[in-house]
Length: 287
Image (cartoon, rainbow, N blue to C red; front, side, top):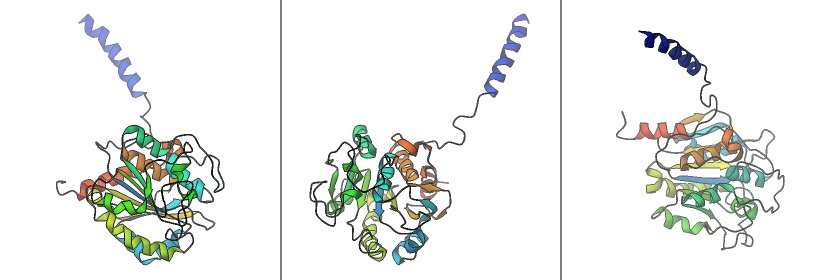
């Protein structure tokens, strides 16, 4: 009986101390517990306000069939800071499109270190990040800024078709040339390019088996900075109204590929939970 009287107050103290602990990471984004990385495809287009993008026929059809983020914004001007934000979680204080050698970081470096396959496909790329002809643009290739080298993972867009039918990397980053991305030739041209290339992606085994395609614009060219993000993934439908930006895209990519978030992506909203929920609902073995 005496031992019970001694233990009772100790147990009460322990329970009180446990109850007083703060909730773990309350209000902060928590990476989803994905067991294995899932394929990610990213297409980056140029200089189009949200409303104008959604008025294009093929883009509008994707928004109706899949999901569109309606409250998504750029993080800077001109193009380069946005590309850096998407791939490293920082603009590095850059507000121009000039070349700046940055530390050897970024999601590409991170994936290489983790042994996770990735490729960045560029239209017009001829083997040299720093000296490839039009329609390639260095300012749209953030991977060449990290460490001042041209990664072997940067390849011509012409390799995409072969990779989609074979060994598709877990991250496929696609950048059309400066005409097809809408920069020089307008959003109508970008819409046609998407209509010719997106079907190849969504008919691939990598996309069908839980893959996700993100189509995003770097900046709006309008005062409000609002751009579109299309989330083309099995089971994803409707409007995503949560405020997001390019750091959110990086957070989602990182969570999906099971690597740590970089820079400001650590505090950003990720879409990984929604993607997993949609994939589970879409699965024939669910429910």
